[in-house]
Amino acid sequence: MPNYPRYLEKANISRSAAISAIREEYPLFGKPTMTMVCNAQYGVQLLPEAEALLVREFGLHEGLTIKGKRKKEKRAKPNKLCVRLDDAMYARFEAAFCNSSFVSRQDMLEAAISMFMERMEGAA
Image 1: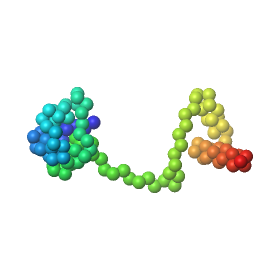
Image 2 (image 1 turned 120 degrees about the vertical axis):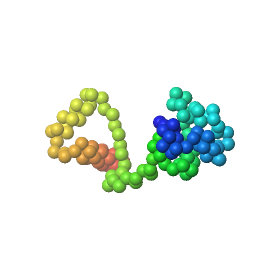
Image 3 (image 1 turned 180 degrees about the vertical axis):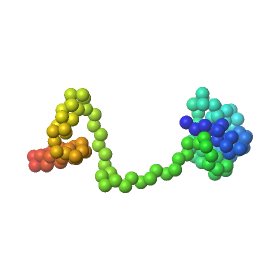
Image 4 (image 1 turned 135 degrees about the vertical axis):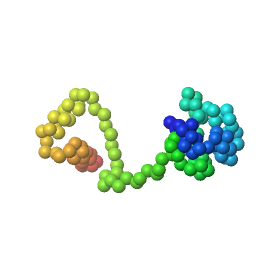
């Protein structure tokens, strides 16, 4: 959660200056709302767009949640599957993996999926 008092301190601005900057886009934003935003006990925080207004006006300083853009993944295999197993099935899987010649669990699962798909496509 952002720490707005820290941001105001690091940017060396007053609450009223921050209110004025936010009020350009959000005219109902005022002192009571700013009080709730600055006190974590209320659980209120600014929209990312409102934080962007502060950054545009006063610069990026410690205390905000604004992060850089996520980098595009450069994976050879971009698709991900996830599975949950109970203890008995996981123990069977681990035993089969340890007794196999597969280098990784992913290789083993890819082979299992490939075999399954070949059977399904052959049955159709």
